[in-house]
Figure (tube, rainbow, N blue to C red):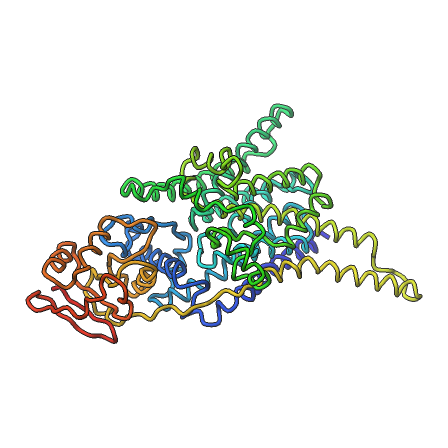
Length: 580
């Protein structure tokens, strides 16, 4: 019997992983239709993330000691940390080279991110005691929730699978479940250690959601430490042995090291560039109204068109369309009253969901979010950088998914009781019983169908901008004009062809060096601008005439270069100036 159980367990996880990959490919389609030339969402943030992954791999292979000193935003040091970075995907950047590989790599990671979110949520709910169907519903509902469609371009926000998977592994290592409680015979130091290491990796995929995860882990550790002490005091022995304790200590140190490493990198930026620090006014501006919890983003196939009017009333729809799913809300509500989980656990999950919702609303609460999200911004190190409270929907939707899994699992158990497969072979009553059995089993699929439908997207997949051939022969450091706006992120992507140093780049603040180079280049080419660019170390300028309209550099192509000691060359629609 034990052998059969282990065999089924292996098959289950193989099916879950394969199913997660298939679901991710289908529900992110058409991401993989033309993965070398298109990106999901827009050609802004996705191209930035594609460059980050590529640069991370390039730096690890060629100069790990200067990982944070990227080729863009020259000559500023520590430029990789000027915005949240998906450093955890850097190993992918070690495979392949060039712009086409960077785009292909990004799209593959994008799909895998959804697959991991599904597998992580499935693993967590299964470990906590849900039936496989309940875990599947939870996995789909969390990984493909409508609110996530608004973040199609934010790989750092979409990267949440490691959170659930880490929690699942740690719970497995400690033999703990919402359904059966603590089972010492199921302790596993290796599972616990693996969970901590997955959590450490999750932190490196971005602090936009990773920092909140770190504080959740701190809170869990404090609660567990208190329970550990109480158990030891009452029973005269610890609740688990030295091996598991050692695994927790080693894993906790690794988790803390990853968090500290990422945190110090961004703290260094604030020290070097005080203008990078964020005030509470950012949080207040991006705090969503309560109705945002019931509004889906434009990219939702089911709700997008239906919520156009409601979306138009939101101050900033991309961060305020936070619908976790109508079906998920209904199932989670049912899960408070009808579930396989214990009553006290359901109450705790409901209270946790309420807390997460209040944090999600940020400063729009009647008491202005203090106590609440603003309190955390004032007192927790680094929290003030999390300027968008709506991203706490990661936790709101996860807790809703756990409640929903409990309800679906209870429904499965109920159908087994009221409609078992009849043992007799003949008779009208047997046929009726079998019909009832089939109908109820089909009804079990309704929750899954509902969350699947709500996860269908209509995300745009624009083609990335063509690489200017002039950049391939431009001596570095190279300035590309025009400079500024979202074009800068495409320029960063272009730089994956060889990673030339360049002052171009777009982050949430303007470094002084970049500002100075931009300002001096507005009269280019003349004596003052050429001298200033040379002094800054710039050796070439690539001008893109088709993008100059309405910019300060609109007149650049028509200006003479006589007597400036520079050369000008037309290359495939672009103009290359060599400054000598």
